Image (cartoon, rainbow over all chains, first blue to last red; front, top):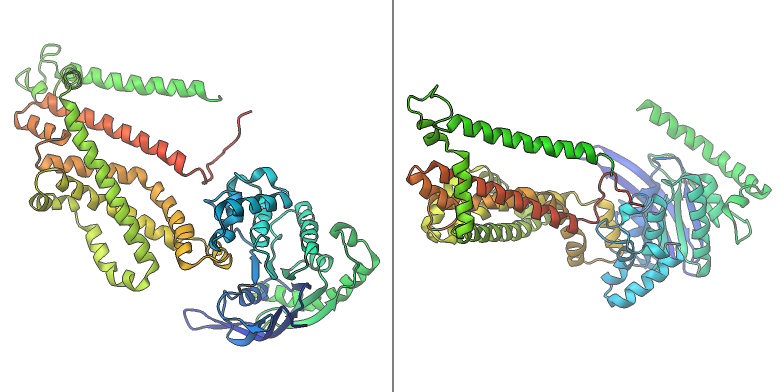
Length: 266
Length: 272
């Protein structure tokens, strides 16, 4: 089977205005199969978001190849949807108009787009909130709108950059369960970036651990053989989860300490 | 509503201050109330500073006889035209320069120079170019409004959130759609933020233009009155202009509230 997404030997070097070079990612290879849920974990500042920006085509890598369903990526990745860590909704559009935006850009007729969008708002639990502006919604609600905005376009690959990191723990677990439910309907490939190992294990089929930056690269891959469907709150209490957590944490610990030590020095 | 009592008290004192000011003005300028303590002639104070009762009577005259309306109308038309034309030009130029680094770099010193030039000085030139009718006043107003709108649009486009922009791109927006659905709405919020300023300056342009040479408008009325040393009419004209400016400002506030519903306002709560 052709992988949905292949990042091959990716290196990203940032050059600042005064000429200083910073190698964020070095020689990273990552493959995602169709329908596979992959999480990438790593200490903060290790270049996880950079990797995702490369995968969606917002950032040109300094070296390496990107293949989307076998084809080399040129420009933006049209097969991918992207869920940002920070606020990405258009504040001047209502929730409904934000969800229709992608369809509108593709020239879908207004009425049809609005019907689809309200169905999606319903699906993410915001049926009665279509007329609200983003500032009138809570952080969790805005994330749901963003999720509907991305999923309405039915992307083959969904890239998520710590989408729930700004939410409180209860809202977060609710959102994680909802994400799993939406995903299980018609499994698409997901690359989920997080620094939260528990979140990564409870959601994914596979967890990739990235080393601390600079020159971040994968240092371990772990298959998560927990049964689906899962409840993210309950699965954390099962023995297998704890086993996996211990295993992956052992691999991650040194990197987290390295990253911490580096931050202390600065 | 909490605070409405202190609010009412505030309004009372504001009105009281106004009345006190009028009373002082009346007492100090009336030829008969006080013996002259500064001028040697009791009528001189009234000659220099006018008398409030006569100013009010003159204002009342203008409105009851209807002579003021054509003048107000002309000033209003000039203000609106200057505002609309200046805003459209500022919006267009602002978007263009903000999205085209080459044009922006090329024109930067000229924009700065034009903006720092005291533009009122252009009024006589505009009078020569566009005649003494409303066109020259509109032109002056446009030069004032344009730069306010231009700089706000420029800033607004520059400060579009990177995430919102990237998100719209990934959702499939073409460059034209980005302009229409991201850049323009973002810039418009900055334009609206400067609406009070730009409407006010359109008004200034109209009145100053009239004052420097015209045959109609409130500025013209004031000029006429000055020509005959009719200080009461001058003050009446200023009174009308001030009231009119306040009215314009109020209309702008109404428009702003309608157009910027999407912006968060501090302490917005729902009434039960």
